[in-house]
Length: 244
Image (cartoon, rainbow, N blue to C red; front, side, top):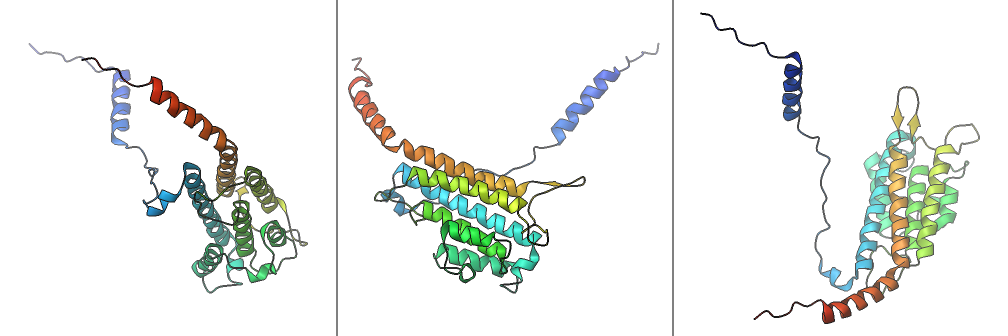
């Protein structure tokens, strides 16, 4: 006698296929959190100092990424100052991190340098000038420093103002044009075939860090007082009792 095997349900086959597909496709890696290397200098930093130092590092890294993106979209700019794009980037980074002046900005710093770099009639390397000026503004808002220790203090209003300056600069970069009607620099692009908002996202990261630091600094002394009271209460009332 021939035994008839039951036919598999179409729905069961579909479910099995989907399950096998899900198992076969591993999640796309998006990187992982990496802490800064340990340094003996941390012994001279409070939590606020450390947070400010890391935020400054990340904000400068964001500006360097923006510089690379802007140079890729506007190659005529780096050709005004360097032989290669990489060389142009190195020059700007060196000037920022050594706190040197940028000659094309005519000795201007902070928001005055930002205004000049975004002037429609500016003829020099606009990418270099804009990134240098923006970095200089952020460092100025932090008291002219990029690393912070126990003797250093931060002004929350200056940090808040710096965040607003980044928002204004981002808007100007996306909308301001030369006398010929061309954008000062090509950055984000939205059209029928492309949607590139990577510049806006990077600017947004800088704004978010600055706003968080501004708010954190406003609570610095309040949190110190709360921590002191918590330690007193913990020492008096939150101790285990002997059981033998």
